[in-house]
Image (cartoon, rainbow, N blue to C red; front, side, top):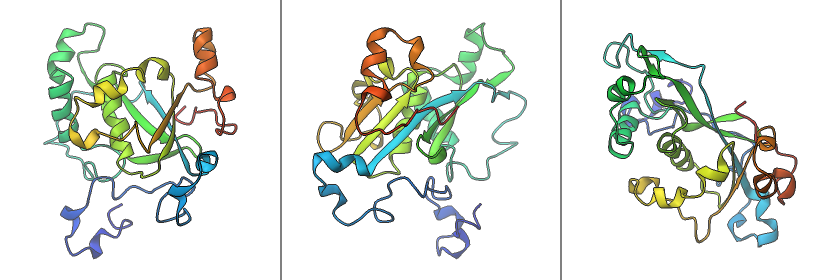
Length: 237
């Protein structure tokens, strides 16, 4: 992967590789400077949907990891350089904002298998073309906790400069309520402009929506929102 990312031709070498730089960007998603016309950011409100980014959030709880090794014995070859977030940075974040240490969590929660260090994997995908995004995948320790998914969400946004974003998540109705309040307490690199130029729209994937209350089925429905086409938001599934 380092060879395909042309890291061997960089004067700084492999160590100069930036987070997510080895990841392949979705060729069909809006990429400023690559596939968008000049002046796209000046488009009138009724045409902004043409340059909209569609993201989907979900997790897979079949992808578990038993506590049989360690990062020292089995280190990552591309730690944070492609699709997974950097292990050390994410753990430091969880210790500070998740109010936990992973081993302590395992010992305190009897519903978890004590031999499992990772109970699942969370991801932020492109929901229109079903492609993984750089630094948008990470380990989970106790379900889809907000603190984990927030980290992946804001880490994914670092690789996009578009101003119109549609986010689908099976619990978007609850998760998005205090998202910006939570963001204010996170590190500065996770902060995004959400009151000014950037516009965020939170919806629930179509397959999951019928299990929600009627109010959610109206407000968070792809079918009842403009400029989303026939997107279903179920890409990670």
